Length: 106
Image 1 (tube, rainbow, N blue to C red):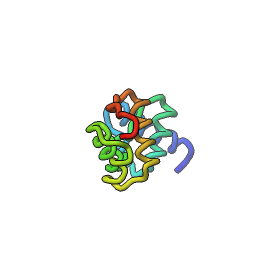
Image 2 (cartoon, helix red, strand yellow):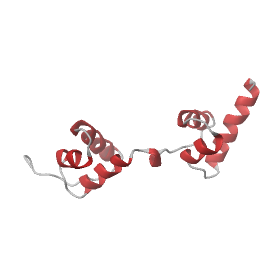
Image 3 (cartoon, rainbow, N blue to C red):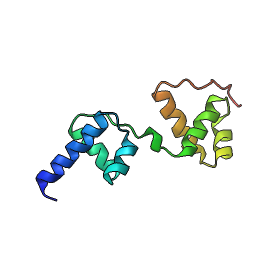
Image 4 (cartoon, rainbow, N blue to C red):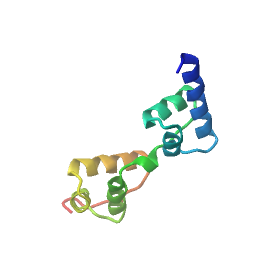
């Protein structure tokens, strides 16, 4: 593939995402990595999300945190480290998700 062909392909990928294709769909349709899709979108100023490619356990931890479980409880039940549960909680808060407040020591 020539440099010009690669540029055209990156534009084609970005346009497909701009047109409503999700990041995961683009990886499958164009047989490229998600990093390639991200770079193509970035190059052409197209927003691209891979939220649906997060591990299922991430969503399971978040659901448990939203239900009021502690990070430690959620981590144990889902099978992730307490550190990972903390990362998920921090990311959720950063994204504006309000997690239930827990009393100290509980």
